[in-house]
Image (cartoon, rainbow over all chains, first blue to last red; front, side):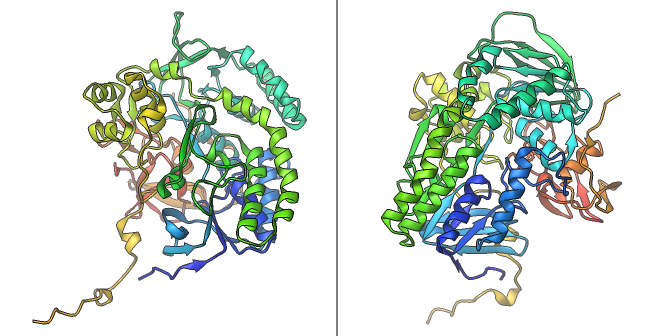
Length: 479
Length: 95
């Protein structure tokens, strides 16, 4: 059997994005033995994702450069980097089961920091399952890490700062989108300006994006959204239409745009399944992306020695994730007895102040990419909500009428969320549809029950390789 | 004429051959398979199991499972799988 014995660390950190990396480095600097686990081959998460092939430093984006810098700091630290490992189970006393190249491994630590980030929210429309329709976050991964440009006729749609970042990034590489479909209007963008005052670096970056977009003469359709995508085996066109500031469809001409690809994103949903699986208290915070673990400002959850930070604990962005990482690293060092209360208080001042400074900007961005209930109300009945199981909005509405009151009942009625993505792509939208059908709060419809395996893994890889003779045969019972 | 996904990252990795449903393809070693497939014009990777609608890579971060295909006889997410020489890729619905 390839199952190894538990490895012991003082703290395990799940997720190697900004929050996870910084918390691991901080805890390690205070003398704790730290294991940092991530599915990717290198640390960085999504925002600091490492290009798969070495890119020249010259044209690297600020995010890629920040990522390289932090990866260097990590390499110089005493943190044990356990990368290329898929986390599939987390149990009490913080026993973490992973699947790596050498099969299943178990790691254990009395303290656990969960920094597993967020995933993308895409408001469904008919045709969003067609090949060539991809997420906005996927577009940033293609741009920054995979090194791929969409076909010449491609359309960019959705909401938030990623729209501008992706449009400008591809325009600079000579692959601008043929149109930008922005749910926001110019007034929404202007409203974020005051919050940028405290972030001169970001302001400069934002101005650079605007210059790139304007000089590429990309048509921008403000206050528009995708109504449907059309095509046979891949997208051939998308139809756009006007919306109001809440994303509700309004009267006005529809426009069909021929395209070979559509990149679309409507914000981020915190991926809080590990704290949920362990039973940490959850709160619904609409402006922070949805259900998140209830945490203090150091990332301590309701469970002893369980910490949750980064976008998985509420959408606040990469900069806040860094100071949250510092705070959680310090809190673990304090709670595990490596630093005293005075030292903890003294060292927390700087990251707490930093967080306060960042709060206005991160709140403005989170507000921009918040879920608009009216946009969900506008989803057509025939649109697929659960991609894995082909469950449509109409199916969900029927289940609600038939008596499904919470999301787990909805799942049992329709199989929505039962496919291999385990409800990550549809969960937020399905819950919103159910809440709207019953005219109740999101709290009232709840969230999916989290269960292992947290990600699909094959039974074969879970069991490992073994011979017939390895199977223990119990002694026969005495006659 | 349908335009294609194109590579924009300069890299000096060795080009390797792999096959997709028996067709020979070339990509730099180590490139994420989802990228290699898009660059080779394979947008449709599978059909959904219930309605049999065409599907392709969607999230590129290992979440959506839309790019789960057969690689060397095992189910693998193309976006999480680096290309290796001699890889045998089969596009048939697996999830």
